[in-house]
Length: 205
Ligand SMILES: N[C@@H](CCC(=O)N[C@@H](CS)C(=O)NCC(=O)O)C(=O)O
Image (cartoon, rainbow, N blue to C red; front, side, top):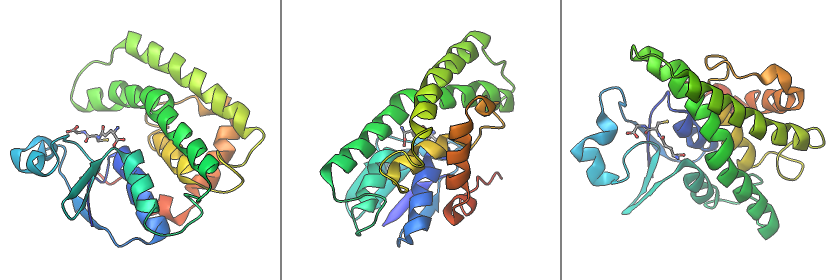
């Protein structure tokens, strides 16, 4: 299998972390986003959705990091993606919520506070305000849940934790107000202590 990835894409990191954590045999193929490779005709020929990450398994191509996590974790028995149907449903629920709420807020702040300045563009104050409000709404839901649990599903690390934690990759650069959420911070410290987190730190250049 091959994973088309970018070493500074947090969405790619989600999958790279799982590959490291489970020691899966997947070849990582770097796509140069800064040079527009993810939109080149050659790449779109492989992955018509464009962007990274994308997994290639023979003639099967899968996009969306959370779908790729489930597909890869289904290849081998492991506790990150337990067999139990309800646990899987809870993991999937957090992953949908990541895409629709938490990750939407952190991504908007990444665009406004990192990507626009990198491209010499002015951040949009109204978008920052909207994203911060969305972040606080989402973070208070996680904070309440994590005040009573060490992990998002069950009592051990699952795909749900990887999915959500990766959205904090650029927490400092995007000025996320994590100091307001001590239980999220404690949970994040557990995830970021994993060797797979350290091994997938973003690389620029
Ligand atoms: N919802 C998608 C988001 C993928 C995404 O936005 N990828 C970015 C990098 S973090 C990308 O490839 N941008 C360049 C492009 O779309 O061509 C996922 O979770 O995989």
